[in-house]
Length: 208
Image 1 (tube, rainbow, N blue to C red):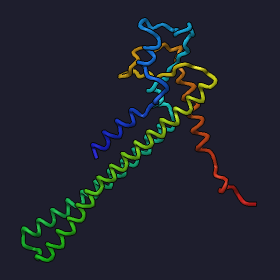
Image 2: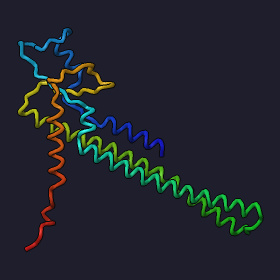
Image 3: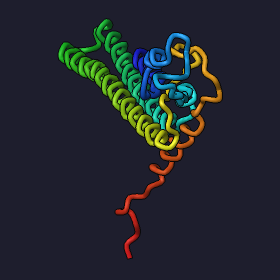
Image 4: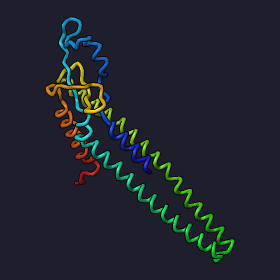
């Protein structure tokens, strides 16, 4: 269970955007001195999005993280209860066996029962794998949603490059605040998410 928590946190921390181009491609196109022009003296329009702000500000990601953490907590609670029960049964069984207060037949039945409970605990490892797979699949789904929204946003913004900036560990070491479009992107994503959650299926409309 501890390994699951570490893996989930690692995945959720990198649940950010795969955008149009990478930093190295931009560097090559801009030249060694970081010029803002390319062949033909066309000015490049560049913007960036703060990945940390996307992680903390996008409501869909927040709700997804809460959902996964709730599932994980529930799995942990069930696992702990089953493990405690098995431990208590085993200790009681050993006391009876050592004192000779249990028949061979009853001892065999008890051992079979405890083995079944242990197998059930071992089977919960698969539930952990299923949860990790769910996180990975949803990660890809959210990345695609963000990419799609940015592509739509850029139809009117007309940027040549939209990049990601991370405060720690990113490829871009410095970003001018004037190029930051994180706020309108997060705002638009959140409005899109709110609209999708407020939609009422037509089948639920009252009949006249």
